[in-house]
Length: 423
Image 1 (tube, rainbow, N blue to C red):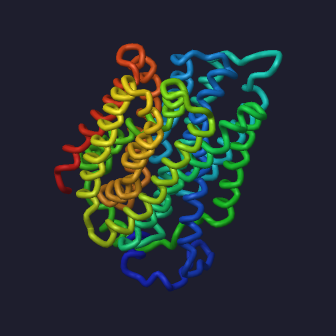
Image 2 (image 1 turned 120 degrees about the vertical axis):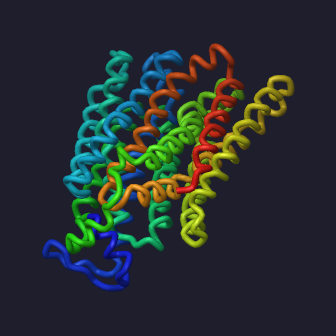
């Protein structure tokens, strides 16, 4: 794989290539990118779409806020625990095997949940069963990020990687936005059997496309491979750890929006399901647009690290403004109508940078370690998906909603100085 990136950097992309007895056309890399988008969108619809059903889940499973936070947090914990092992396995096994295994197992498990872990008129699953089931979903879904990222870094050359990785990262808000629009209403109208069944079908479709088109790119001679894998392994590279930690910190406020913005708008501002779903969908659509733009912009300017610093600062400012608006709305109820808009601004600000950050991280790690490095970063990301939903109910008890958004601003502010040091 390491040699693949070296080869793509120096040969014309219009040239057909041959690998493992297969001939790939000059545009096959776009099919690989499409697979990465489909796989990430499918799992994003799961880990972002399920939290968007928080109000319906709280009602259907008879949960309080602490139990809801635990269930949603364990979904993130599963991904956090499995990301790094999946990434290491990807660098050893290859993209295709890992992605097919992970997507297929995720589809099968969601189908089991649709049959056995849903509330009915006769019984309601215990919170322990729901939480454990979501933990397994996360453990299996952790296969997607490192494997799809490694494939894309292998098939695209340096001048296109930021753009390609940013397009892949649009799959996260794309899948999350579709999940936010569809799943809450689906849960209210048809129950969680329909929710889990639909998500199982999405993962199965993504697995089919991966089986059809995802193959290892053509290999290169061992000398080129050695040249591109020189330097420390990612787990011994301090710069890889720095960027990974900063990525995780920036995701904490993003997770707060994805997991509890619907509850915030419902409980604090009195908004209905349509408004909460539309707000989250707009956040995801705006994030998707910004990720594509930022990838192209930083590819042309060569300013990935500067862009990441700017995103950190803007995110801290946006969440600080949301905090102030919550304080003001408590005294002036008319300001409640501005809260969905401010959630959109803060959510987009803290979601625009992903493709740029992952490209920077993969470049720092070196071609032979892409899967491990990307999975290390996503481990920190999903630690956030675990801890944030668990922490928010306690912040609500102690400091109400203004405390939640002030903490989100603080996380983004802490990430800013980590990006100050240039690689």
